[in-house]
Image 1: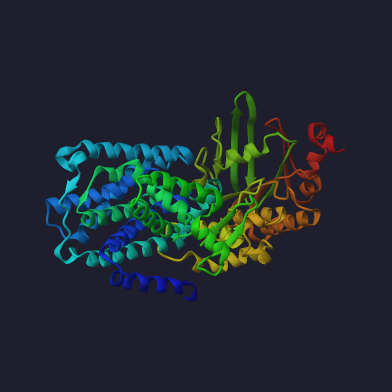
Image 2: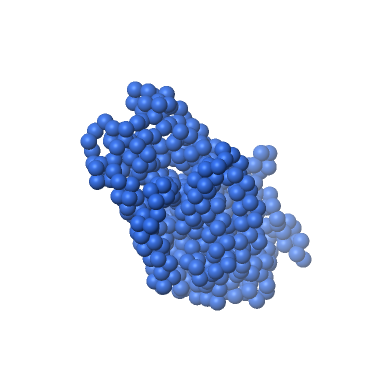
Length: 320
Length: 247
C-alpha cells in the first residue's frame, strides 16, 4: 500500500487542480487526460506485447466519430455514447487486428498503418455520413457537462476507470502472457499458448480504450475532423510513450503531460512544433532510452518501481 | 502402452535431406536417447515432433491420435513439452515469473484478465523452483543467470507444462560435470517417480549410457541402429559411424 501512496497524492492533486488553475489550463489538463488514456491503450500493444502499432489513431478516430455522430444525430446520453465508442472501436480492432497479428515487427507496424490510412480516407471521403473533410461540428455535451470544470471531472472519472481496468489487465495472467510474448513468442507457443489469438485479444482491448479516449474528445472540442484518424495522430501516442517510458504502466501518462504541455507552450510563440518535438525525441532516444519513467526508476528504485534489470544484452530493462 | 509412434517421417530443407524415413515407437514410462553426430538430424526430429517444422510426409501419433503438423501450442496442450538446446527463456522476467508463466499456461489460466498474477500458482511455482534447484535465484532476472542455471530454468519451464512426454534437446549442454550429473539425476528421478516418458539427445556418451534405457542412432537423417544400450554398443554400423569417433 505504501508503495502506491504517491498515486493517492497524485489523485488528490488532480481533484484540487481545476480550483487553482485558469480555464485555459483546465483545457490543457483535459487534453492530457484524454491523450494519456489513448497513449496507455497504445502501450498495451507497444510496451506489453512488444509490437509497434502505427495505426492506433484509427480506433481513437472511430471512437470519436461514434460518439460525435450519436450526439449530433440522436439524443442518446453521453455515457452510453462512450460505451458505443468502445464497442465500435473494438469491432474495428477485431477486424483489422485479425490480419495484423499475423505479422510482427516492421510488417506489423506497416500493416496497422495501412489499415489506419484506409479508414482515414473512407472517413475523409464519405461526406453523407461522416461530413468528409469538413468533419463534424456542433457536438455539444449534455448541459451538466457544458462547464469545462465539470467536463474535466467527468473526463478524470472516465480516464481513471479506464486506467484502472487496463492496470488490472496488465497485472493479470493475461498481462504476463503479453510480456512473455514480447520476450519470447516461440517459447510461449511451446508452453501451450495460442500466441496469435492472445495478440488479437490484446489488440481489441487496446482498440477499445483508444475508442473510449476518442469518444471523450468530440464533446470536449465541440467538433471532430478526419485528421483524428490520420497517421500524424497515430504518431502522438508513440512520441508520448517514448518520452514517458514504455516499460512502466504510467510512462505514457508522464509522456502525455510532457508532450501536451510542451505543445501548448511551444506553439504559443513558434510554428516549428514538429522541429521541437523531433529534437526532444532524438534527445530522449539517445540519452534516456527508458524514457522519463525509466530514468526515475533507475535513480529512485522505491518510486513505484518494480525491479530493474540489467539483462545480458547490457540494456536496462524495467518492469513494473 | 505406446505413447508416441512415428511413421515414415521425411523432411528436407532445400536439397538437404534432414529426416529420412524415420520410424520409431516409445512406450509410456520409457527413458530413451537419440544419438548421432552433429547434423545427424536430432534437433530437426524434435522440431518435427513438436510442430516447429511441418513434415514433408509421414505421421506422428500421440496416444494413437494423429498429431502430424499440429501447431506447437496444441501439441504442448496434449502434454508434450520440450526443453531447447539453447536455453529459450524469458530473459527480462525473473526465474519465478518464468516458471509461473508455464504453470499458469498449463492450468489454462492465462486468459484471465482480472486476477493478479502474483497471487496465483504460488505453491506450484515455489515447489517447481525447489525441484529445479533454483531457489536461490527465484527473484533473479533470468538474463542474469549462469549458463547452467539457464538450462535448469529451461528444464523447469518444460516441467511447468506437466508433460506426459518430455523432449530434452541436450539438457546438459554447457554444464559442468557435477551440474550434468545433478540434472540427469533429476531427469531420471522424474522418469522413475512420476512415470514421465523422456526422450533426450546428448553428446556425452557416459551420460547416454548411464541414463538411457533405449538408444536410437541417427545418421544423415536416417535411423541406422536402435535398441538397448548394449546392443547399440555392439552394433557394427553404429560403431563405425558414431561410436568409432569416440574410440
